Length: 372
Image 1 (cartoon, helix red, strand yellow):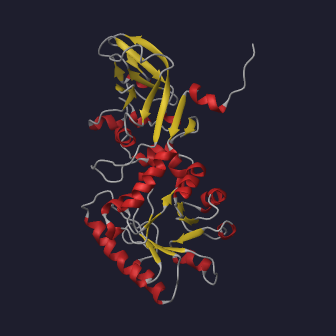
Image 2 (spheres, rainbow, N blue to C red; image 1 turned 180 degrees about the vertical axis):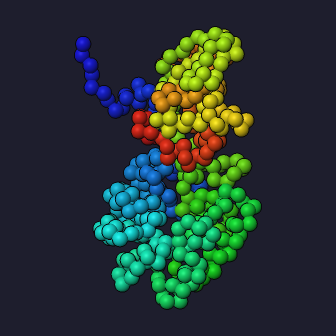
Image 3 (cartoon, helix red, strand yellow; image 1 turned 90 degrees about the vertical axis):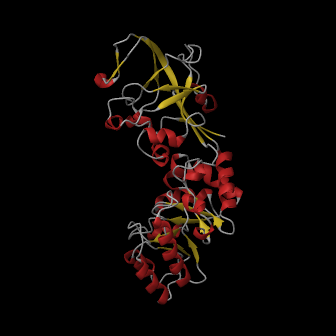
């Protein structure tokens, strides 16, 4: 028997689990966010490999659309993406620590300094840096008092940055308090660019935009503001193949722990994705602590029809109830959508008791990826 070597162009059509990433939708989302930001320039957060979707593919497309400023988490991420962004400013949000100076300087990265210890590494150099100011998160950043002292002492960063604690909750009092505090800091660094707004901050209005916005989750189609319609285009569609469909009798159990017992005769489809693929165990239909709260388990979409997960999601496989779906649709070889156009990223995440950020950044290496 002769076996042909696999062709990446056709592997997608035969993969057990696959992932479609719409680069055009990302660019359109960036343009829409840029329009909302008004006079402020719009950057892009591409940390965590562009939220798990491939920074080396996405970042150049955003650069061609006009994006000049990119944000990564650590120096290694910045170094990896620099060849794809030769002319961009790449900010490293975790700053720099002793021993990382070489990678910062060699690749022309801009560390976002978040402590006086980190600042000491750049004292006396002409290398550019940004200054992270903590206005209430109690995460990274110098204090507001330290920022004022640095301004009085003539410290001149490339950019002054802070981060919203409750930007996804428009009515939260923290938003206005942080904005007021950051306005005072920005004024102290007169003539220097400032940045406060992430995705959520862009939607809070022009007061939060300052000079530069840095959207993340909204670029990738995720929800930025809790409880409000999401205007962003869908970017990611995750699919997995049905490997087998089996008939079950009322009283039969499904998956580990026998936590699901069938109430009637029906059909169960076994799907080629599990928690090793970032399809979280907490999405299970039963047998996990989250189900004890009354929140229903996740469903998948088959040609627009929903099929609930039954029993526990396992490492490589998920079982779904297809009793009420036409056998011509729910058959071995058919792809079901885990999330994407039929079931949104944030809806799937909510079923897992988490947020869209976590589902995206958890996507495993076994997915065959296709970029549109």
